[in-house]
Image (tube, rainbow, N blue to C red; front, side, top):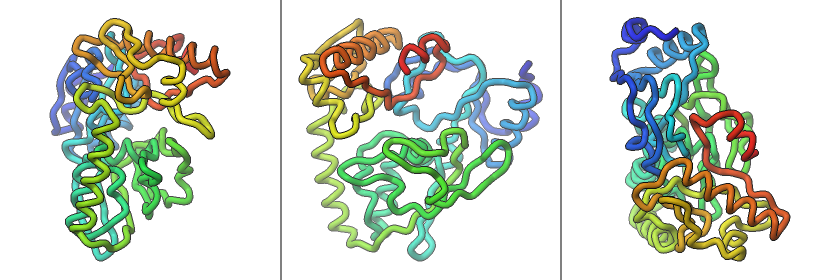
Length: 305
């Protein structure tokens, strides 16, 4: 059983009991977590993970809560949020080092200010660098791993450096899912800051015109199937605008589900199930989830695999 006193002896960061998680996510959906912690250092994080493993307590790691759906019942166990204290950005010659908690928007801005190109396609993607690396986030023909040198992770309770070639990067995935990303180093090509700013602006305008950025959402719900696009399949099945409760397949982009104000996780799951079933029945393609489901029963998770 978890001891708050023991956690407090390990961690000097903020600790909250029964913390609502909906405000911590881009979907603005989800129940509370039993214990919410913002560790201040790698040593604190490693000590906490070691303790949780000893007492067999469940824990998850959060950045700014994009690309996830948390159940209405919340999460039993611990949520470790690393955004606040793991967000440093620095440059040494051609190499940029970024903390896992750095928001992608801040990372892109830092790169541009230092006349380093290759990150502009990440502009507008919600989330932090750690989560983006784990899922190998990308857009407009580029991925975050393109210019990566190495990533430092907490593996078990040991700090390990993983070269790009050993990280298993692939389309919207990597072999880092069981690790806690701490930081990463990038070797980005030189560029002209003003031209890079123009390119970022173009991509942001393109993204904002094509995606429902005015409503809470978790980003793309489904991975693109091989040789095709999830949004195109969903639209061709007549599912744009499909609604269940407060969850709504976006009119602007069919691979987005938006929270129109009062959506629950159950509403979103109902939409996901209907979309997957309809697309499968009409095309024989079973769409695979891109978002991560947290706090759901094994039965729910198995039904969506």
